[in-house]
Image (cartoon, rainbow, N blue to C red; front, top):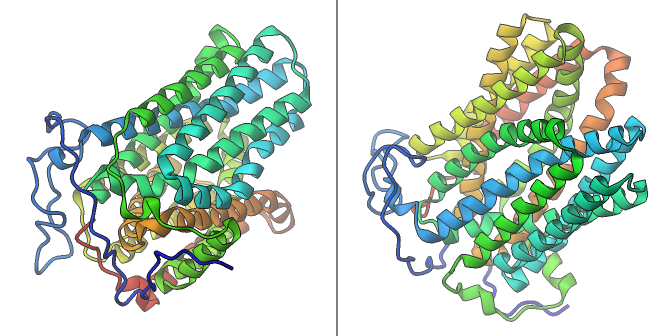
Length: 461
């Protein structure tokens, strides 16, 4: 197979770092109020400045280096699109059940969305590398705009056939698969402070995860499922417009000579295998997704709803989202010299939520567990995203991120599917305790593995 000509050998974790110089800085607009989303502090110096010589943490640079024109557009695009994504489950549930469809149709419709996302995300990574992430994300938003608009019309005018709902949900899943890989490589191109950018995006994601379903529920009560899909379509229109208005400096690899589609896919796998810290974390995370993250959501929903009612479950999910905000805010301030090790140290807090749920503790204790779980997971995700975006060469970043997303989706989905049957066989509390033990075992592996534990932050973070 033909191999891309502009590709260099990839070093392992011991000496892995991005050697490609960053693109020329984009002229920035005046910084936002220091008390705004970027947090307090003045303009910072070079990336990584302020790291203490005898401490693992240093002070974070100020907001002026983060809130430039391109990052503002990207932030709005991501925030609005995530807000729209949060509406989809509510709209599907209300629309299908309101039309007299069986409850199983909701699950099939959601599966029709997630299936194409898991299958096509690898192809989305290759396409983003070949045609630039920005173009693919705009195309993805156009696809999702069309799908949501048609669903809005069909739900507003009558009872749409199930096959049409499933097909249009699949279109949205393909759009998400085309969009997601480009997110990882766009962050370092719109901000010279990658960790702060990831932290801000994580906080916004947590807030939108709570706001999207709440807004959709209110809109269903006031209007209909069709109105929710109309609002969903509008979010994709705003996202696509913001991405279109971004003006990114050309990267050296944008015009690289590339091989066939299959060769690009195989080359992405080769680069994935070349970094022991990368495939090590993802290999461990497949176990974590299957045994911990997969069972966690359905078991929490069932046990809390049965014991305390659906209102308590909704409140706990909101507390989990608030915890994610806390974790993102911590990641704005803390800049560990070994980010993967620091993120792994936070993950044992997830086990707390599993144990208190298994013990049948009262709602206030469950809320504390959810707060800790949300904060620790968000902090880990910021550390992980920042590490990948600053250690992987930009010409391979989209494909490697796609491998990460595909593996995570498949294993979490498998864990969710098997959680019910396994819980019926061995008991839900026992399964939760086993998940807590596996959670601690995963943390131990992450901290024992030298390429993961010793990987240092780069100056680009």
